[in-house]
Length: 249
Picture (cartoon, rainbow, N blue to C red):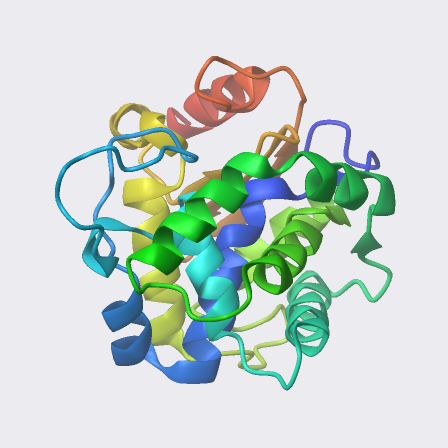
C-alpha cells in the first residue's frame, strides 16, 4: 500500500461493491438482465450520443450509468436503508466497522453532480430507471463518498480473490459472485484504459478519481493503492506503475 493510513473517498471503486450487493440481493440472472457486461470503450461518465435507443445491454456496472442502475437494485424500503446495507457490506468485507462517509465530499458531489443527473434522466427517458432520480442519486453520491484507506481496499480485494471467503475461511458471499465481479472488473474496471491495463497488468482492478486502485489477484491476494495524481483517463499514475512492476514479479 502507498500512504496506507491516508483516508480518501472511494469514488468509483464502490462500483464493484454496488454490483456485489445487487448480486447478493437479486441473483445473477436478474442483474444481468438489467445491466450488461460489455466494455463501452468510452469514458466512465460518457453520455450515449448515438441515434439508437439506449438499452440495458449498452451499459456495464463499472460506468456511471450502470452503477446508478445498480443502486436501484439494492433491496430496502428506502434509499437510506439501501445505502446503509451497502455501507454494512463494505465494513464487513474490509473488517473495519469504522468506515464512514466523507460528508464534505458527499455534499460537494450532490451540489455539482449535474452530469450524473443528466445520465439518470436519460436512462429514465429510456425506461431503464423508474425511481425518483434525486433519491437514487443521493444514495449514489453517498456511496461514492464512503471513506476508506488502502488497507480497506486490500482486504476487500482479498475476499474477492478468495472466492468470497474472509481470512478465517468464512463465506461472506457465493464464489460465483466473486467470479462475476472480478470478470467485469478485468474487462471494464479501469475506465477506457481497461484494455491497456489488461495486457500490461492482467488482473481484475477498479480505480477511482479519489486516487485509489483496488486490484484482485485471484487465489493469491488483494492489493490496495492510494496515490492521488491521475492520468488523463482518471487512473492513479503511481498506482499503475506499482501494479505493472508487481505483474513482472
